[in-house]
Image (cartoon, rainbow, N blue to C red; front, side, top):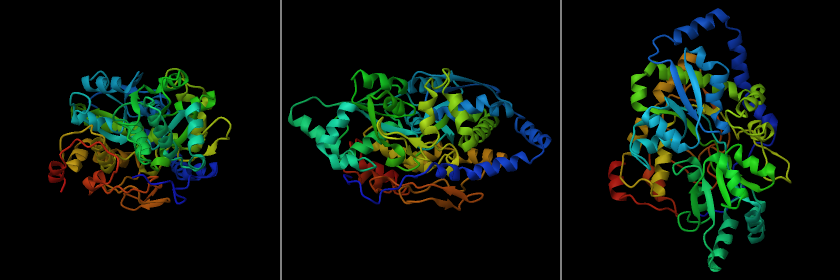
Length: 473
């Protein structure tokens, strides 16, 4: 998998106009909604709140910009619109989120896309069936390193560091030099063992031939603590969501090397997760929550609303970060370092476009392949069956129909095949979709997950491949 970055890598949008264009259809939809008489709209909303099994709910978030759909649904009244009395609880770590949802202290939460899978399969914790019917966003992460490591990488391979997306080729040379000098492995951080961030950091490193289990030391640090640990030199780099990459850049203590959009265009990032037993006991409430979240996510993606999203989530009770730092990525730009002007990146945060809220079972299957790749999952499971029991697109489809939003009519799609925008026709009405390329050119076919797992040159498999093949014919 050690492929160099080539010139046919996906092109990032080059103007903020793209951000406006990509959200124009949402503006049109909002305009059409405004033409519906208020009385009719109110009647429809009231009808949607009938038969709720539970109305007083507590949802957990982690202070990251992609908590926006939950926070906006609360602050702008989308939860109340559907008869839900929600409180939002800022949690200290992803382990807190997992454990509180598991024991019922939270009704649901902002979760890493891999968390419902890990919770269900017992990866890193006692098994607890957990499900999701709503994907909160696409993209939103980056990899940042200290100024000292950045300078070493530039010295080791100047050409590699001039090319974007930035590969880990220069980092490999720094690591090899340290090994030759008998130095201890460098320490990098990610936010949770089953996080997108862990898999993205590993994917990026492994693409250059770095074995993340042997060549570096990976530790877990909660997102808000990343910058302080970089500044105090406890770590040399990290993968995290916003605003903690841009915060290090603005403080002048780090360089953002690459975004997760560049690693995998429009990758799934967070989901809204609940216990399966909670979902089974509260089907009407669950669907009402999804309706509210769909509308909140659509509201977040309207360009005219992004500044207000920044103002809302920057507050101390949520992300607790300077508005100018949050604003950078939220309004379609990205800053790699303090001396360079912000670069256009219209799709850094996608909350609703590109069917972003649909819980693709193929995305769940991809996460399972990564759990196998890095030895987190040792027992063989039927990957498609497992994904189908955790990601619940039918609940999303029901909610989407009730709020008049188009939804895919398929549950699975390949990744790494679309270099440009395309149209999903297998939907209740055509949906504009974005690129889905991996930066190393690999492709993921959810019908052949075992072939994908076997295709990696750097891996740490602990599963019996014969047993896995038997269950995944």
